[in-house]
Length: 147
Image 1 (spheres, rainbow, N blue to C red):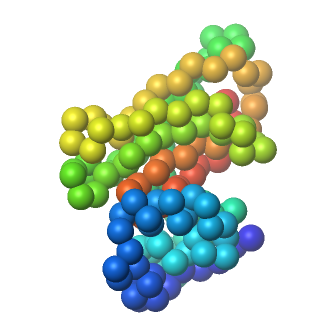
Image 2: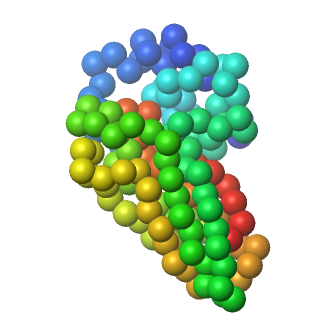
C-alpha cells in the first residue's frame, strides 16, 4: 500500500502529541494512521507500508545498509544519517526478515551514541531483510535489502 504524505496535515495532527506517543502510534497504528506522524512533503515520495515509512529517494531517517559476507555469515552494518540530541534522536535500530519477524535490535542513547549498529547473522546470500530505524519524533523508517 502506497500513500503520499502531506506535511501541513501531518504538522497539524502532531500538535499536542508527545514524542513517545508518536513513536508508539506509528509502530502500532498500521498504514491507516502511520502517515499522521510523518514530516515529509508529498513530493518526497514517502510511502507507508504497514505503518512503517520509506522513500525511493531516501530520507535521513532510513538506515543505510552495508553487507559483507563470509560464507553464510553476513555482517550487516546500519547507519542512519540523523542528528542525535535529547529532543530528537534515533531510539533504536532493528533487523527483520521479509515476514517482519524481528531478528535483532539495538537501543540507542539519545546523546551518547551514534545511530549505527552492526549485526552478524547466519543467513544464505540473497536473503531479503528489512533494516528499521526508529526516530522518537518521526516514527519507524525502513530500508529493504538482500543480505
